[in-house]
Image (cartoon, rainbow, N blue to C red; front, top):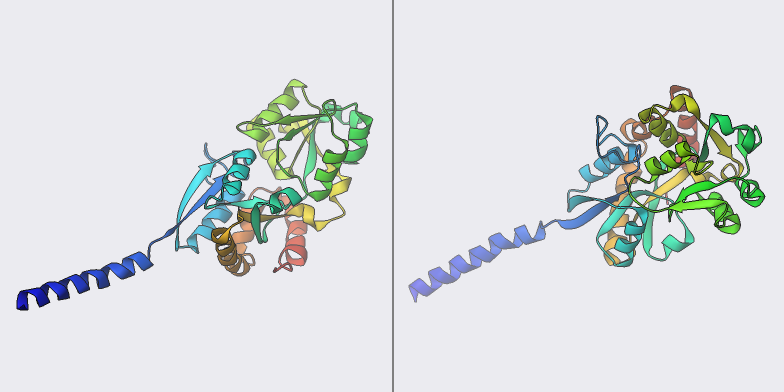
Length: 291
């Protein structure tokens, strides 16, 4: 009987010791990352220094309850992961009606300058010789070809113009690895006349390819009327896991967005002349949105 009691006590202690380890078991969280520098930089001397790399690192450091992994995936693969209900998030996604059907969104996580059209300088007059253009008018004219990434969003107004006026003759949709880089190569080869992107994205790729002095950007009128064009969000699968993840991520964002380290992740890739104006918008627009 005495031996039985000793065995029972030992078994009880085993389960007591095991219980905390189960309670501390980390949940999985896969961060989906497009191959699109300078959002994410997976190779070369700037590896890990893309602004969404840096923001993901900040979020991870305040989410120790998750076992974090990283997955390189194009936007179509993002959609597949979310529609399947995987434990997956992405740090900087625009809101679109389609995406709202299968993702939960955080408060804004990234504030950028608005998307632009990237062109060769020698094509400036073909776009009317103006630094600001209407995407809808360009598409309606049908004389120029706009290259774009399949399923990538460029902001609500920009997307609306694409959806309304694009066709097989005035747009070329690309789906594949290294989206921005391959579209840049098509621009260089004259297969497309322009491609949408962020200003810092354009300059990073142009400098990497040694053609910075050949490239310029045009402001897009449709993206000037709504601050939403400059905001992106953490998106996670639309299920109970994703809802909990977003609630937790929101608390981290509220605490970290006002810090210099968080803001500097994007400023790292801006030209010095843009920083003062960006900081004012960061304070006046980005930090004011808390839900």
